[in-house]
Image (cartoon, rainbow, N blue to C red; front, side):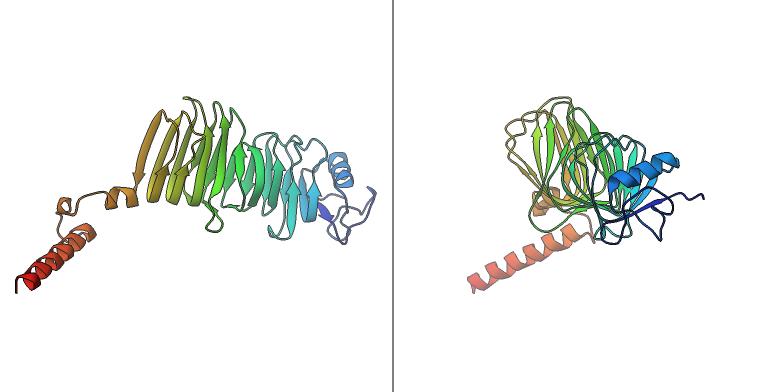
Length: 258
């Protein structure tokens, strides 16, 4: 029989590689059997219900679940070059460029590749010398999530990336990070070099020791650092606020003069 997905289920799966194990109606309960069936039948997609810890080379595989709360994968420093992960909770040390879509990114290290429509729920680090992209990604809660740039030659781009973020360990002039979105961003004192470009809405706190190039185009910082007398365009929010404050000042002066 032919099918294109191996099914894994921690709670209801069974052991063994003989047919029909690995089908929707008879999922396997361990990743070793799931991989063996996949390799034997030239199948590269594994559907996950429950928790998996990778224990072998899974280059080129696709992992998926129905919901990040129903399926989780610990990467465990196994090779995942050109893998895709969809609707899963992800944790552990990555090893290779991979794509994470609609995932719940927990404590992950050495990430490279890309995250799309995902959520950061714990600190992450980018693999030294690698590039990682994030599109439509947000952080969870009010505590800042650390993005650790791992030192030398590392690049990260978040467009848009929204939430509370602390950038750490940007340490080389060739390293760069771009974040566009609605953010409160902290540059940690561990930053000693590199380029940081931020834009969108929010605020930037610069605690860096040194930085090669900082471009801050966050709207909140730009807006609230401009003198109210600089807002002169009719019907803009800045002009209305400025005029309101001027009228209030005039009223206060009039009241004192009486």
